Length: 260
Image 1 (cartoon, rainbow, N blue to C red):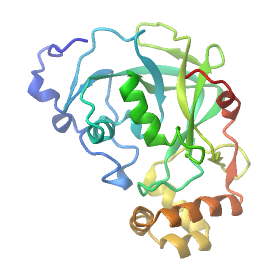
Image 2 (spheres, one colour):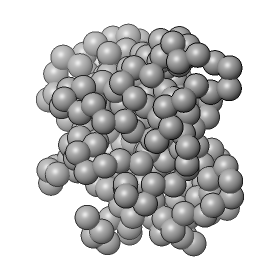
Image 3 (cartoon, rainbow, N blue to C red):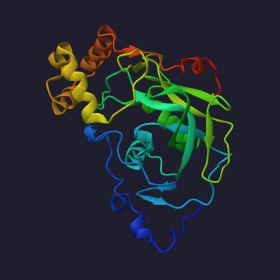
């Protein structure tokens, strides 16, 4: 892993604060999914440094579709468990996956992102290359180890999904966190894309008197109430189903393959 400066940019300008990447959605839920880097980098403490390679065969590739692509959020998760090892974040071109809306209300106060199957669709996302300790932290944060957790970790193989790095290298596949509750649909039954936290919450509240009764009339109220009450989040998650807002992501089939 390369800790040199990037061109003429000194290392002190590579801090997350200087790069505008320090805020964590866990602390500021309406900022979800948080700020993503403009390019690949090595998250090392409070700095994002240049990389000397884009593929790490000794680490596990995990596709980030929400706040796990935000360095401030990743740092927050790792520090909570005393993990200080550097973490490579590689920008990739992904074909076959789009970013939708998780069909659950998070205890963090937001409605998170979740991937859905989108054949032929192309977009840029990040692969986080995790060592075993880092993978355990992220798995725990997504609820993977518990039967009632919100997400399962699934392996998406090539060629079902195509992942290319900036130098044209095609990966054999990647892990991704698939929501066990499903995703929200767009009104036609197809998965909808995530528009950002404030418009998403505003739309949900506007469309459901029952959600407003539980969470208030504004995104700020929604976040405050969700963060204060895990039981309320569970009720909100069930209500999404009762209001018929939920559909399958199309990626559930990959959860049946165990590659741990």
